[in-house]
Image 1 (cartoon, rainbow, N blue to C red):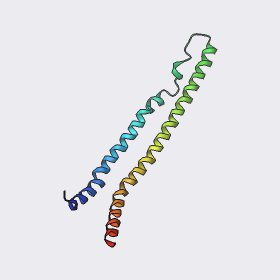
Image 2: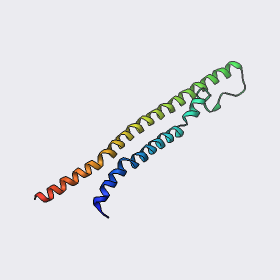
Image 3: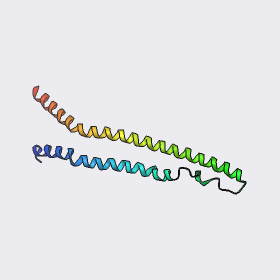
Image 4: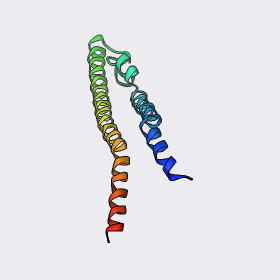
Length: 124
């Protein structure tokens, strides 16, 4: 393979097609996190009692207290999941920003290191 023709083609691919693939990968990461944590389902069922507990027969006051307690537990559990989902989104966002910066810089670093290596090889 002709390396003179390969390097320009690689740089064109690296900064065009591969960046579009990277954007699709970013979209897939966030789609996965959205569905993994079931954000829509958690939002729709935010005030539903935890595991549907508290629906047994008994006095009105007893059912109301147990129902309110189960709703509070459900809200707390869903808030914890929302917080974990938000943390996952933030960590993923910063990891992808770091990966993008690395992706953009590494070919230039490799070219620079090749240049330094060849220059030092012939300067001896």
